[in-house]
Every structure is written in C-alpha cells, then in structure tokens.
Amino acid sequence: MATFQSPGFAHYSLAWSPFLNNTLAIAASANYGLIGNGRLNVLSVDLGLTSGPILQRQFDTQDGLYDLAWSEVHQNQIVTGSGDGSLKLWDITLNDFPIRAWQEHTREVFSVDWSNVRKDTFASSSWDGSVKLASTHHPRSVGTLRAHNGCVYQALFSPHHPDVLATCSSDGTLKIFDLRVAVAGGSSSAPGTAPPGSFDTPISLAALTVPASGMEILSLDWNKYRPFTLASGGVDKAVKVWDCRMVRASPPDAPPVQEPAQEVGGVCEIALSGHEYAIRKVQWSPHRPDVLASASYDMSCRIWSTTPVPGRGHMLRIHDTHTEFVVGCSWSLYDEGVLASCGWDCRTSVWRV
Image (tube, rainbow, N blue to C red; front, side, top):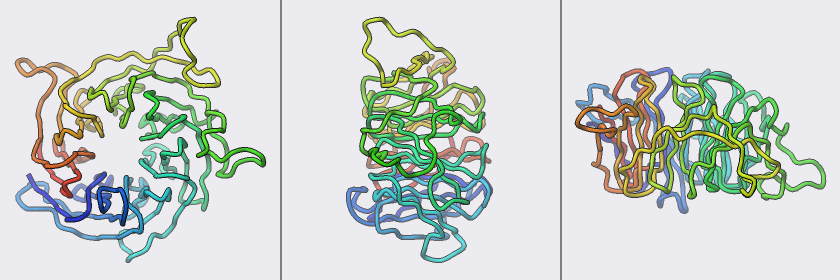
C-alpha cells in the first residue's frame, strides 16, 4: 500500500488519468469542505506500491473542491466542481489559474463527469437540483436538466450510449434521462420563469425513475459491461445492483413519483450488506463485470462480487486503514486490481485488491 497525505485538506474525490496509467488527481477541501479553500493535487504513483505517490502539481482554489473529472480528449486537462457552484477547467502544464470557468449552479457542485463516448461533453450535478451539460468549446452550458426536487448527488453518462445519463438524489430515486428529449437548451431561463435552482421549474422528463430507497442515495455507477445495469449506495448502508430495463405499472393508489408522470421501474438484482454507516461512493471495476468497490462513512472501503465466492460470500475484502470518513474510491483503468481510496483523514491510499 502507498499513501499520500495533505494535512489540513480533507480528500473528497479522486480519479485516475485515462491517458497516463500512473497519474492520479485528488480534489480536496479545507475544514472538511464546510468552509475555506480547495486544492487540486496531481500525483505520480509507483504502481509497484513500493514507494509513496509523488506530488507533481498543486492548484489552490477559493472554495472547497468536491469532485473532479479528467478530460477524455486532452491528457492535461481536468474539470473540478466547487462549493461556490462553479466549474473550473485546469491545464496541469500551466501555473496557478484555471483556463476556463463556468458559474451557473446556485449551490454546491457535488459531482462532475466527462463522457467517454461523446468526448467533448461533461456534466455537473448540484445541490440546486439541476444537472448542467457543458463543453470546452462553449463559454456557457449547452443544456440543463431539472433532474430532482432535491440535491443531485451524482450524474453519470452511460459508457454505452452518448445520449443517456443517470442521476441519484436526496429524494431516494435513481433516474435515467434520454438527453435527446429531456434537456432544456442553453443555460438561462425563459422570461418570467424561475431559475433551475429554485425547485419551481418543471422537472425534466426522465426515461425511467427507479424508487431505489426510502433514504438519500449518495452515489451510483454504470456497469461497464452490462448496459442498463447500475449500482447505487446511500444512507441505507446497502450497495444495490439494478436492472433498469424493466418498467412496471404503478399501483392505482400510489402517489406520483414526480410531476409530470414518469415511467417507473428497475429491479434490484442484489443488495449487498455490511457497511455500518452511509455509503458515499460506489464504482464498478473497469476490468470485471461482477466486481465493484464502495466507500463509506464507517471509515472503510469494501470490495464486492455479485457472484458469491465459496466460503466468503459477496464481500471480497475490507480496507480499513483510514481514520476518518472514506468518501472516494477509484479503480485504475490500466492495472487490474489497483484501487485508490480517499477520506477526511486528509489521506489517499493506493492498494491492490
């Protein structure tokens, strides 16, 4: 195991470069992200795990950073999401300042995701209930989803289809959107209408709404091998795997999930129990269709298999070396079995499953 520590800055999220197999970026925030500055760290990692990661670049921001995503077209560019509602694009070969910024969300940006199918587009989700679609070619967002009547904790593009995006929220639902029909063009509201963050604008029509939990859902991820299979994790402490091909009729006496009426469905294939507190992050392995990782407020990161292992069940490993909430995990895209986890103990660990 190799570790990197940045005292005073809680690590919120991390991601491996899609271009360079030994490069890892970390989004961090002072004072646990409650108030104060943010920091973007770029590390070089010895994948033999015989020595600690080396800090290559560091960028400070005026507000905390909650998430990041590498560009899918430029190996030196990273987009970050901030507590002040801004998105910033960084070139890690340049000094000090972002090369572009977007300021459209009215509350914290909690996730960013770069499409690996439509490689010039990325998405951000916010506590203002909206999802913004943006491109490095445009100074403003190119589309807006009023996705939920609550915080949108994560929005992820499908790795199988350029026009499909999934979200999860404090309202306990997963939603799948067809971006060809659900997106409101541009970043500004029509005259006389409320801004996207007001919770008064109409909800964008989802292709499917999955009532996944009676509690907040904090994270989701698409399976890389099985289209329309999603994993979710949240306050109910269970990692759940969903087959989202199924649409079911709502009972006549059931309250509407959202207005206007949405297709409701999804079948929970399996619920994986073991975490003691809320699950903050789930991520499928990029190398195996049945393996995924989860990070939790119980200070552990766990590895699961949806196929039971004789004598061990579904849980393959518990990594419990962190001393605070574990809020991020990321599989190496090139080296099978290498995982990085990060937490509020201001530490990132790189380890082999």
